[in-house]
Image (tube, rainbow, N blue to C red; front, side, top):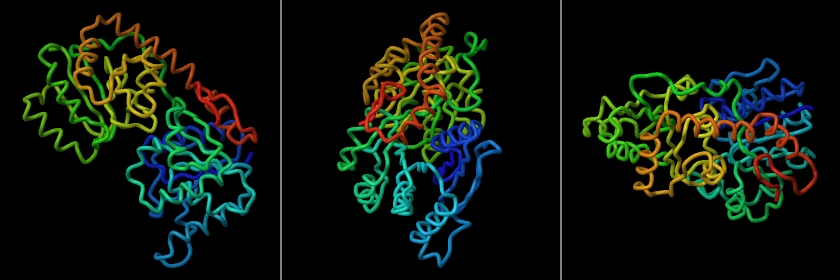
Length: 376
């Protein structure tokens, strides 16, 4: 099977990590995988790829002056598609999806496009890209979103699309096994991980932790990640006098080791495409607290069975949930984490997710998804 996989870049984000996981898995089973980064500035690959994955940069194939770059990308991708003659085409992210659909029009290729954020909350899309998505997505063989909750949202922004399926992210390559008991440390650690932007609401998480710090004197908060809000958050921590209790160490190159050293995990996002950090924390065996935001936490937690869900925007409920976890016994936290790990490892294992992606190229209009999702 020849697979042409189109992404924007292979930097350090969640979509890139999922792309690497899928590409590597397909290459290992014997498929011919060509991964094309469509970012105009080329960039670099920060993900580990299997030797069987062929990595190309669309920037190396562009022709003509810079002002023709949008059209040049479409033409360059069309030339690549004709040269490679793939059996399947997969595209990640809205801007790449639009380019892929225009570039492959009339070539007879089955193109599956995937939204990597909740379509109802794609606030940064330019109007022309929103219009293009609305008009071009019906051309796709199938449109993939990451959660069942996103399906009606996609229908709102692209009402003519009929072939939609929810496929969640798989557990990543190399994820360690479920840890054996809590880390034996002098201090207990509440962990969070993500980019410091308004959507993640780390500024509010800091305020909530500050409100319970005195009741939980053995606990610290560590937030791994970087971004535009990190300096302001650091200043606020110092104003609160909690620099020795709340730490912002920056981007983590070893997120699973860092998460594995924690005693609980919290996600306080306003919106998620699919919360990879929550998935990985649960899979490692951490007890987790998450806002019931669109989209992903409710499906990962099975409505609150395997992680504590709190209403979005309800800081009092978040405070109570964190206190409940931090004041629980180590045995209770370990039991909660163990059940969560068993649940997500069964539902989001790579084999099940690969079967779902394979089925996305089937000609049938309906199928059951790997985690309760359905084709629509």
